[in-house]
Length: 171
Image (cartoon, rainbow, N blue to C red; front, side):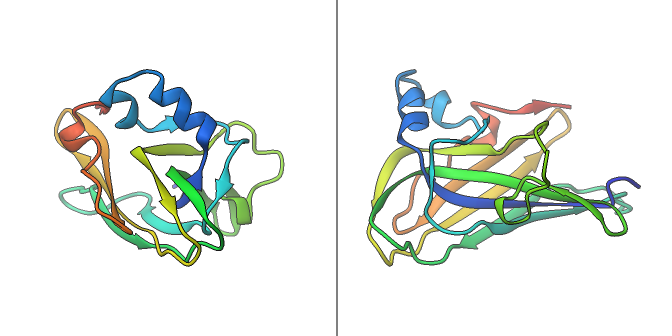
């Protein structure tokens, strides 16, 4: 099967311009929707960490593509603001042939796929040395697929997009 596997990664970022654009919408929905964006005005607070892995084809019976991850990031190297998380992926197409939009393994010339941004409702001041943790879920039911996420450390945030109330992908 092509691809044979896909792995997603998340990275805490500071992006005041993007967060400000969302804030101008003055709606909860704006902060509970993940956005596919070309990130060019952002600061990576820590390196990206592995989130979910999918192996293709999925031969489980019944097929279950729900996932849950609790990610712990390396301590922040400087004082900054946390606005959300950038999401990247790598895919093994066949044997040793891979494509990636993860910064560390980015496939040269890969301009057809962009990162995804999972915003936080409120930006958070991060001090140098702070450890950031997030929980993220890939959820599904018979009609839709959606993501939920919440900050765990340095403080606990509300769960964003519970039950896909603001954003989901129809099946």
